Length: 215
Image (cartoon, rainbow, N blue to C red; front, side):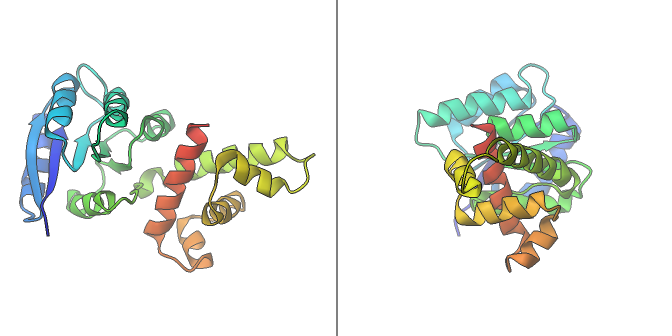
């Protein structure tokens, strides 16, 4: 199994040190760069092109969300596949939604045990999204509001469900999940109704959120 390369962009020295120790303790991970600011972080990401970028939102110059947006712009012009993992104390709705709108792949709240981080990085590296349970309700509420608003807008049209699929280019499974979200189901309930695991549901919710934010 090849190593998963990681760049750490974290303003707090002690936190960055703890992340470094945690990740380097795993044989499958290799931290290849680290910095405490966004300007240097962007240079590291563009130069080293790691598998995973761990980014804090609270940086002293470019904030983590703007850094994510800038690097995603760079990625769109190059052949890089770096995944963005936001690691932060910030659980506010504006920050969570802005992070995903900027292109973040996963969101980890620092209050969660650091021992969970290796699993989160594995999930993210495998092209899945990891949304911290502490902010899941924000994402679900955004999904419910956005899709419900679209339903209301299209009430006068026949086959309004199919119209929603066309507008956002939802897949069949994404459409089923959106209906369950509107019905008030949480991640676990959705996974049970669709006979799949919670991580798969979270991945689809992340994709749905991206489609709505990019509309």
